[in-house]
Amino acid sequence: MRKSRLSGIWIGFAIGGLCGVAAVAGVLLSRPSAPVLEIPVQASATRTDTMAAATGDIDSNADGLFTLDFLTGDLRCFVINTRNQQAPPSVFGRNVMGDLQIDPTSKPQFMLIVGRAMFQGGRTANARPANSVCYVIDSVSGNYVGYAIPWQENVASRGGSQVQELIPITNGSARNAMIRER
Image (cartoon, rainbow, N blue to C red; front, side, top):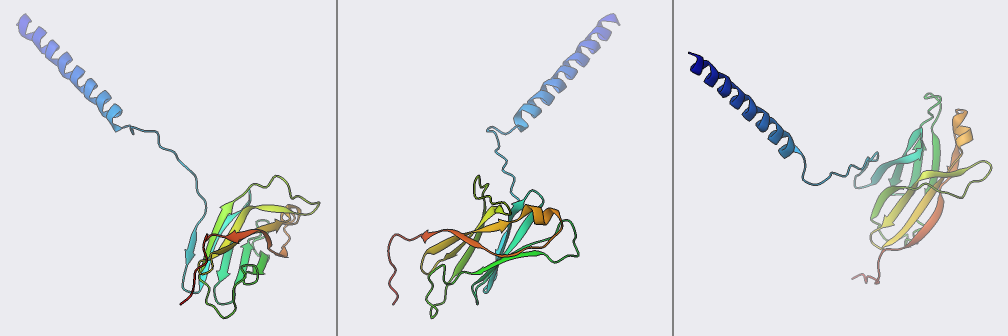
């Protein structure tokens, strides 16, 4: 009897040990083999045949909604009033056709991209560039323009609305060669 009791205890230890080894192996095998880099993204973009829209960071309190009307070339940025939601939004705008040097008789094919930029300079007593740059590209010509938003943080903190023009800060061509039309 004593022998059977001791063997039962050893069998119990053996089964418990196997369960412990299996649990440790499961934890170790479930970990990814390479570290996973997480990049927080708080932006979105979409488009139709005649309009594109994207969001981008304005300051620590608000995003801006950027819209580009393909029919008119009007680029706008709308920023909600975080102090008073019933107040009108701040609106920044500009027509991109001249900045992109688009022939008025051609049919441009626009792309709209909003990137993050933490400007170190550019502050004035009343304004500083917002935390985003809005890029508009005409894929027919390859020309692009980047726009800054002249954000007045002191006006926003008081709950006021702003209406200003977007400021072109960079431009160029994404193409190395001229494309001939047929």
